[in-house]
Image 1 (cartoon, helix red, strand yellow):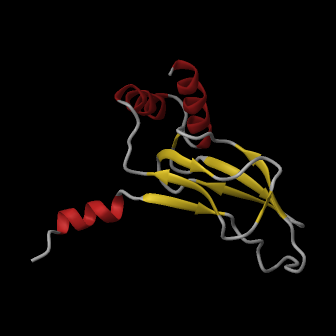
Image 2 (cartoon, one colour; image 1 turned 30 degrees about the horizontal axis):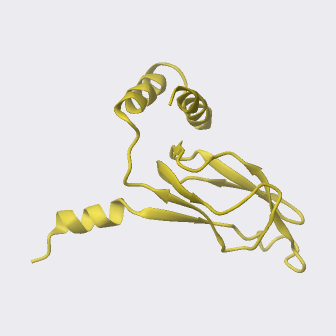
Length: 132
């Protein structure tokens, strides 16, 4: 019999590769150039679920990329305004490393009593970088 708890843990806590997205098929797909338009995170920064990571500018559209789950940015393989290619790995997020106890309490308090969503992630990240 397999240990289902161990299998569940392996599936849930992984290193998530965030890739450069492709331009939607509804736009022109020939001779499309992709470049990093905006970068919102740094290496070793904690990111929250649905926090914006970076924007990719394609020929006809700007594509926003957000984190699916929270974790620490382990590798950052992109640079601002540099050309990139679809399906290249841009960021690796280690989802097994939770925030510190202080950051966890701060997140809970802010979510419970003040604000939520992407603004929360941006504010907490900004202040935690200044504190630590």
